[in-house]
Every structure is written in C-alpha cells, then in structure tokens.
Image (cartoon, rainbow, N blue to C red; front, side, top):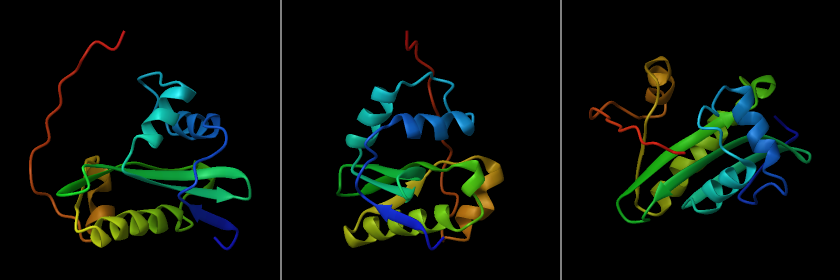
Length: 135
C-alpha cells in the first residue's frame, strides 16, 4: 500500500470510476461517466485512492453536515482488494464525520456486516427502498 495515494482530489477522468463500478457489477442503473462525476462532486465528502495516476478506489459521504452522514460507494478495484485500501478510506470517511460531529451511517449487504462491525458500526434499523422508473 506504500504506492497508494489517498486524496480528496477527484480523478481527471471519471471513466476510471466507471471501470471500477463495472468490475464490481455495480452499474445496474447504467450510470454514465457524467452521472458518476455529478454523484461524487455533489457529495458532502469524497476520498479517492490512486496508484500513481490510476484510480483504484473511492468512497463518499452524503450529508447535510449537521446530523447524519451516509457513507456510500466505498469501492476498491478487485485486483487491489485485501491490501488495506478500503480500510484506510473508511477510516478517513469516519474521521471526517467525527471531526464535524456528524453521525456516520451506512447500508450494506448482510455479507459485509461483520466487516463494518469491526469499525464500530452496528445494526440499528430496517432499511427500505422504493423503485422508480429512471427512463
């Protein structure tokens, strides 16, 4: 992980983030490069991980900056997983929330519960969603 640079500066080309999303099977909504750029730029806080100029990870927080910050989109390129990159980004996201007295929250799949519990997260509610027509 010595060569990984963590920064708030977004990539010059969000096609790199699209590649990460597609490699993880996360683009079921068929988001465009512009969608991803808007998504990150409109987030309260975002962190990016680069190996030289190659984007290898990203995480962001959606928040009003007062009460709750929703951590979302935490992702690492599969070939870079299990090297501590996601852990470092998550620690920085949590740290940003704590510095601003904002409660960090997130949604995750059941298979990731134990991972997030190791960072002090705990189940607290039932999440619900409503599908919309995005066409």
